[in-house]
Length: 172
Image 1 (cartoon, rainbow, N blue to C red):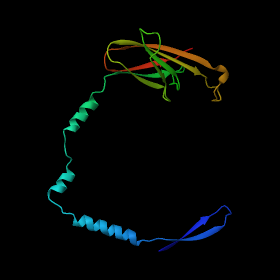
Image 2 (cartoon, rainbow, N blue to C red; image 1 turned 45 degrees about the vertical axis):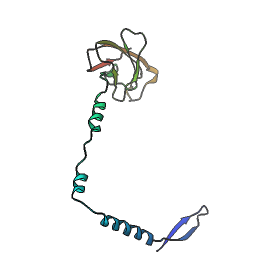
Image 3 (cartoon, one colour; image 1 turned 90 degrees about the vertical axis):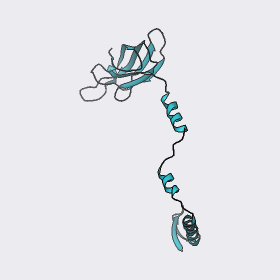
């Protein structure tokens, strides 16, 4: 079988190249494969073994190892600006109340949301947020000359492995 193939070069002239393909070797491979499948002896047990998955002792052990994930509490919050709209890119720091330095640094997403896993059990945490905010003008453009630095704090108490939903309102 001959196939014509057009190629272009940098001089923008078209060349015609004739490629010879041998289809006989492909046909021979398919014939050998079909013969091998038909010649294989089949027993009554093989279709049942293929349709039903085999259960082994390893599967319950794998499920147990996955379920041994450490327990945690989740602090989930939303950062709001002075106009009570969610703020994107707020720098959030979370620290235990007994410590001076933050343990976790986060950024709020496009919906103003943030989430952090903390150890379970009784504990108090301080959540602090900072952001730069530029209000919109009457024409809908951002007024960079009136940029403000917003801050907000909140306290959270964790009892056990639970999810705590909170809101963080940032003001001047």
